[in-house]
Length: 374
Image 1 (cartoon, rainbow, N blue to C red):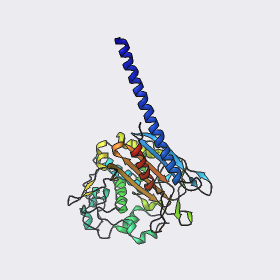
Image 2 (cartoon, rainbow, N blue to C red; image 1 turned 30 degrees about the horizontal axis):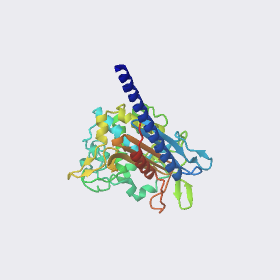
Image 3 (cartoon, one colour; image 1 turned 135 degrees about the horizontal axis):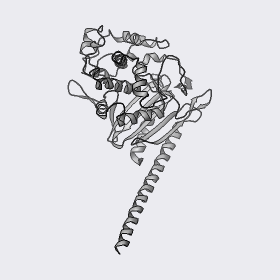
Image 4 (spheres, rainbow, N blue to C red; image 1 turned 135 degrees about the vertical axis):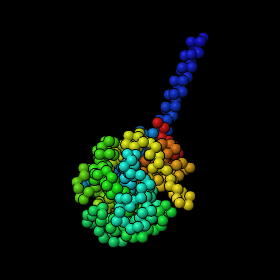
């Protein structure tokens, strides 16, 4: 009788596990169906599109590419296709700075006048951490009209600095949050000054190579990159190939080219502690407290928000003809990455329902509601 009871107990446990697994599989199939149905409704096979990857607890749950990498050549997008990720580059620059801080080669409380002794006197109150979290008060390059006229030509980082270095601060450092690409130009230069390497060499040897990100590059002028997509502007008349802009203008804050497969390695690497400890990653993902005690929901290269009462770590980025978004649902450990080779330029009046941010948020809603279950 006792043996029969034990056998029945074991059989029940096995059946319970099987039913749970089957239930999870059914939920996952339903979730995948909804993701595919949504994506198919957004992207068209004969137009520019996007590569999408979804991670759950560090494992790939979904990965697929939609549309064309090149309209003229009819080259389909793949998950190996290489895109510009724009301001998501700031995460990499921020982690590079934190790596140097771990090695005591700099301090986040260093006044940046140490690295830029010829800067105006009011720069002496700006600390490295103010550059990281956009509380420096330095005007954004995008608010300097004369910068845009230089876009087709290459420029040295020092040339970018010349555009803003002598302009008055918008506010006292630490007083407010105001997004500034200019600050990340300075951070890129600090990486070079402290490490003794070029920004590209530092990134390759300290981030890309250790994480085996073999399809990730610091974009230089007109270089040939394998599997690189053609970027497009969405207009009222359809898609137009994006005009050339020298990538040198996005030094420090927007010059990385990569694909979804390498972005997976990046986020797994951050959470594994392979290139920097989890303690420092947590610091990067912590909101900023301003001088008056208010909170700015931006850390060091990472932005924070909420979705369906869940904490979100996110960042977007765009270059000329590419659009990117990264969204991590922290409570569920679900990570969504969308890399697209088209965008609607601000100020043109064209709306883009398939922007990387909108797609990422729509996918997040599906995943929060349904799973996945791994």
